[in-house]
Length: 433
Image 1 (cartoon, rainbow, N blue to C red):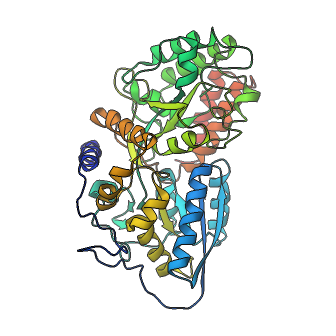
Image 2 (cartoon, one colour):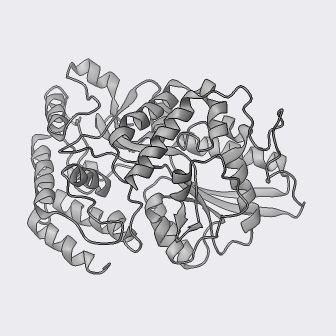
Image 3 (tube, rainbow, N blue to C red):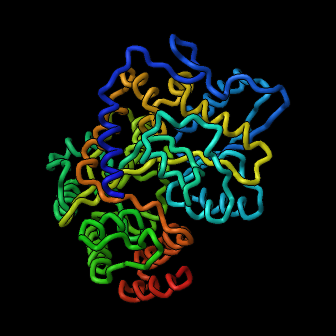
């Protein structure tokens, strides 16, 4: 799998340098172009419920894309449901269990096996043009050899930081290839020059994604393996948690009552956007949201490494279709347009990551902004030694998204000791095995 992911990264980067002189997107009339399956269709009124999470920039671009699609297909209208990432998973799970999920669902890779394994998603093997999507990237949307999700962007794990603030502080800025020791030292150096109520790093005690990166970088593998085995290394986890305990005492990370208010990608409540912290973990595909709030303020860097790298490549997110939808075919037509049409690409830019269609990427390359190029640069820097991507084991999504967070926050608020918290993780994991 690691070989596939590295191949995807290299192919993606090669595509970035190729500027097609006759780029043609489906549904856009050009020399040699072919009409998308989305073109035409009947005139029966169709209202598609569609749900996504993300930044304000992604939200605004998506609404414009929906309007553009309705202009091309007046019989198709949309009922959009949008939120930040917090609470999205719980609401979607409740809707799906009640067979009331939206027709078109923005799906996180970590949840795909869960929903596909419960037969809650429609098969997308036919009806969406995928020949221009790299095979390894496309295969990330499969479960038991059936395609249940269409990837929407290339992505990589990384960290975002306020480069303008760091430059003013006069501390050594983060650099690609840095180590965890350098990361924690950067936090201490920056805090020494920050004022009250300003912090250098996020408290990642309760962040499963950051801990996964840390354990992987120590050569211990994923905390939950892809086949659903509990693989938390006790010594590694205790060292990690106790490090953040020290950082809380030193004021390098926010106190728990502040850290727990962070709402990822929210223009006001994200602790990066409201200048509470200098740095936090992120993904390439989230960067346009940060840059949209404060243009030219932020930049990206690779995650710190231990005995090996800690970063991985992944699809940014997917579009899936509910198995209970009355409009599966109409939903497929919209997804095909969204991924393969030049008009859609012009509207959406890189708000969901680097475009997955090679033709669309060729078309978009001359139009890339500095923000777009920073996304691509992070993917390039993570690619050479990327860790295997673990989409999340079937049946474990509630543990990684909720249980781990709850137990981590108990440590942060001093309601339990690290040792007792680890025992609780072990006990809780038995419910999923």
